[in-house]
Amino acid sequence: MRIISFFVSVIVALALPLVATAADTIKVDVIKNPYGGGRNIPELSTNPDYIHAAGLERLIAEWGGELIRPVQDVRLKPEQQKSYGEWNRMALANANFADVVREGLQDNMITVGLEANCNDLLGMLSGLKYDSDGNSRKVGLVFYDSHGDFNVPETTLSGMLGGMPVAVAAGHALHNLRSTTGLIEPLPMSHIMWGGVRDLDPLEADRFREYEVRQVSVQDIRDISENFRAQFNALANEVDVVYVHVDMDVLEPNEVPGHPLTVSDGPSSKALAAAIGVMFENPKTVALGIASTPSFNSDPDGVSRQAALNLIEGAINGAKAR
Image (cartoon, rainbow, N blue to C red; front, side, top):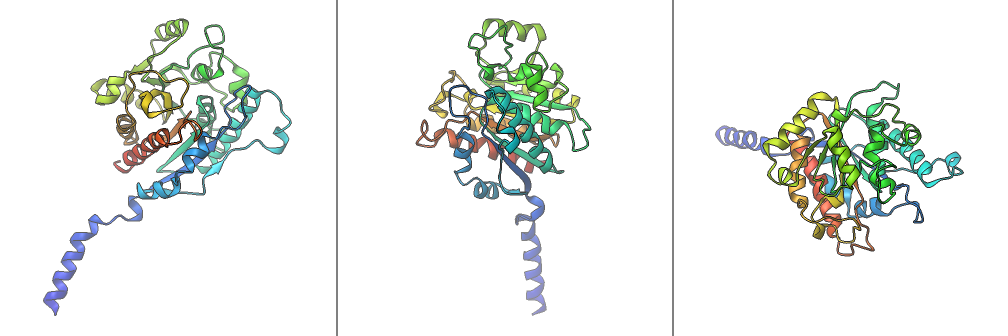
């Protein structure tokens, strides 16, 4: 019997490393911000709810994540409901978003923002930059989008606020909007990296050249090339934390049916998920934002939703590999 017990103990000991434990899980905080600042459309986007409705809590657990609290849903406060102006109300909602991000921050955790559109990156940046006492840290932004979103009012062709949020975050335009979100200090240009950009307005392209922006191509993303790694590592070395933001139109159009601003020749969601995973292997990479996912009405088969889920899974897999 002692011999049998000995062998049983050995077998159990050998098997233990193969069993997932609590230490193997990644803490995750998920926050929905449905305010995008759009005009002449419903104020609250259904895009965040569409991703959430896929059974996100269950999927996160299957991927090795552990939610630190129920999924949060940003709303204007009662006293803010009387405020007017779509852009102003979006900025106020982003300030609330920042508060919710800040409240959930913990060591060894990733924050996932399900965002109406790219304007919501301002709230995530504000939430990551300042602690509850107002102390600031250096935040890096990795911005995946087929567009630069680096226009200012003087250069935009469309007039869309959604084409300006990175310029706003960098302090190049709409300073009151940025400060209302709580992002008092703009991001230095050296703390911003673009990925997958392939459609710029002419004067926006001039701004890219003027500022000699840090960027990686679609092919760099697909290959996870040496340039990709070098550009990201250079960014990460300059900051305290990194936020990875994805506008879903960065992907190949067939993965985002119903998105009105797609551009051909993008990476697949699997390729981008792998690249995001590499970034999340670095402990400084603490947050992922998914913006502009088409909702059920334009994506009844769930193709774009699955693409978004692939990206979230990629971030968790990367964090698990730390």
